Length: 70
Picture 1 (cartoon, helix red, strand yellow):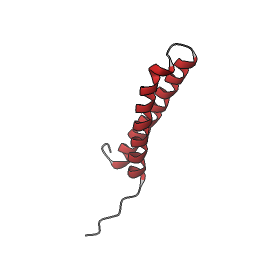
Picture 2 (tube, helix red, strand yellow):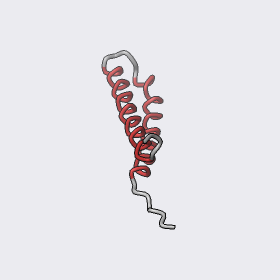
Picture 3 (cartoon, helix red, strand yellow):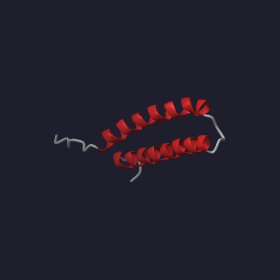
Picture 4 (cartoon, rainbow, N blue to C red):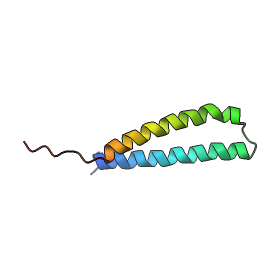
């Protein structure tokens, strides 16, 4: 079923992977001389911040939820 907590955690996990790929492409672009470190610095800082946010969200979603026994 779509829209479940488990589904959401999966999509967040995919986003984390995509972010890691983007960071890798930025670093490779610097190594290849296509971009300077100055050009990528702010993007990498934003990626780091977003990565931390995604990790917090993913950890929260991965935690088991208490069962409501009303």
